[in-house]
Image 1 (cartoon, protein in one colour):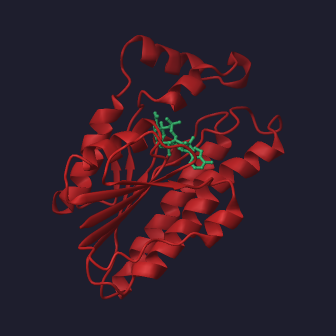
Image 2 (image 1 turned 90 degrees about the horizontal axis):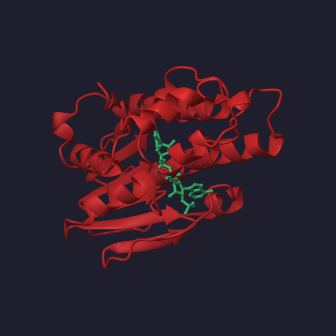
Length: 237
Ligand SMILES: NC(=O)c1ccc[n+]([C@@H]2O[C@H](COP(=O)([O-])OP(=O)(O)OC[C@H]3O[C@@H](n4cnc5c(N)ncnc54)[C@H](OP(=O)(O)O)[C@@H]3O)[C@@H](O)[C@H]2O)c1
């Protein structure tokens, strides 16, 4: 069997990735989020709050002795407090770092630790963002957490050259995708976000990407890594 642990499967991009993978009977999807919306015989619901660091520290992956392939998709994420630094709630800063950077780093450490010596196809795929690669005003915690986890993965990719059974690493920016995160962006007060109008216009002009298209592309990357030699990708390219 092939096992895919995916964070943030309750909606949006994570759900779309899971839905595509579940079309193939050989795939088992283990979804990690606070809520679950998928009902499928090959779907296992793992309820975990990525802001609860104690629970994340205790988390362990299944052993899966029959696995021929195992993948961790780091997808769950929050936009965080959209506002200029100096006006942000400190609690929201902690929450964003926990969900987008600290918990994913812990989960990836656990994942690699458990499976490093296993001889099978192994992969980590990160849902990145353009915001990992350039600044956006009022998105300081989002940009910095997205950059942080992307660099964490690039270091891992370098380290994996020393191992007999290395993990393949991908970090893929999907474009501007029509999910609840985009609804949240358009609801921000204009005085808190200079670029609000750009996001409102993208939606009005029908320029948002369908999450299903992202799900298909991510599934293709996981299915045919031989066609994707680059670690960092941007689906808009
Ligand atoms: N939408 C875009 O335009 C866009 C562009 C670039 C990158 N991305 C990235 O794509 C990823 C998915 O975003 P999306 O647009 O699909 O957002 P979304 O529709 O808001 O979905 C976010 C997912 O993350 C999960 N999540 C949030 N807080 C969590 C927590 N405390 N613990 C566990 N899970 C949590 C949610 O599950 P629960 O609420 O059930 O826990 C949900 O399944 C994010 O990493 C985002 O940064 C999105």
